[in-house]
Image (tube, rainbow, N blue to C red; front, side, top):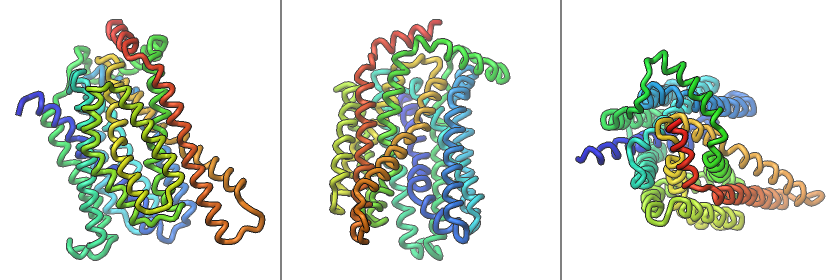
Length: 444
């Protein structure tokens, strides 16, 4: 294998490795198992509130530490070391979920939150390796390859884990509960083992500004301070990040709220699991196609295309009635979800100073952690408001159900606002101006 290809595949394999956590643990089994196993005998409202609080703390911690650790990693040439540390923190915590006893919901939250910190923290430094792996001519296709491998790898293991829970006897397991616990172990093994490929094939990029470890921490603080001082030269980056925050908030809200929305309008949980699998396997080839589209048609027009598709999906979602429509929407989302994520990551790489990649991807991931804040809140406000508006006096049981479903449709429709704002801001991003700003910062 050519050294260049080895470098690219080594980098992309980390997406293959860690996406198992995102699918099996975060999106799939943890929310369900938390309710049905770890929260047994506990006050449901208290345990749910504490889980939400724990998730918020994890997101806030990662968001706040991202730029600083990124600056330290840039100054000390420690991107890869930080990625390894956080990745194996996540691996250990995921394996640790197997040991959490039934009813011990507080320990389950702690271990899960630490796993999320490991997963999110490693992604900061994984993303920051992209500019050193691919030059500008290949960065779109390489970024898309990473997301494609993530969809395929995460989807394959999730499919196996779903089969384990549906047919535990085939795997020599007592019941579905034991199957879920072993699924967490399988994610840890998968994540930890495939990360070795990235460790072996991707070297630490040299920036020419390596400091001693203690000095890199001090210089990291200084670099972060200088970056905030240079804010007047970062108008293009700031405009893109603002646009990204809005439209990726819409994307993340749909990812996080689709299951709840589906249940609200009457779909079964099995339908939602099937839809999640569809998104994973459609997302694999679609992310690759979007990478090629970005290279040939242009990255920004390709992101605009994805935003338009998301608006159409949201409108259709408000009107769907049949189960097959939910599956069709899952296919359509799979076609653009990986594409908009991959091209946003590669487009950003064009706007940032290359010798400060980890720090700037720290800001990028910080906004990613703050994403899906506006969307769910917007859905909640609109849903409650429309429920009050639509509710007749002395409603029957059937009317209560109908009003609840209609209010949910209005709530999902509100997400369109985020895509419109994000797309509008993206329209004013000037890539050439952004490159000039990045060159200026690299030289000063």
